Image (spheres, rainbow, N blue to C red):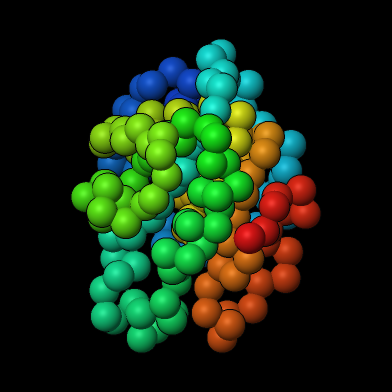
Length: 173
């Protein structure tokens, strides 16, 4: 079943047809594990040179979720990873581009205001290097990328233990 679902998801991403997901069931939880299969590199018809970064904020910055999970990210992480790619053009995808414009310091940032999550995931998966946040959306964009992925060393508050979740090939910063 999971393999059929992944094939449907994969074909939907490649076709830009979102009708498959209209009226679908929404599952909540941590849908991140390298056990789901690491050879899912999407064979995007178009590959993009350069670096993309996905910054998830949204409900992460609500007081309720900070109390529940801890502070899930810091500017320090983004500063560190952006120094690793200081000579590259970095394509920024986020649910809070205003925050990104005010807080990211890098000389070559290009902001993308893609509202379609399937297209955003497809774009994120097409870059040579992907810097991700600690979110399921970022995680799956990294899995589909199949190339160089940079991720936070600490994914969630230490109260929650994850054994297998970050692929060994990914650079943890």
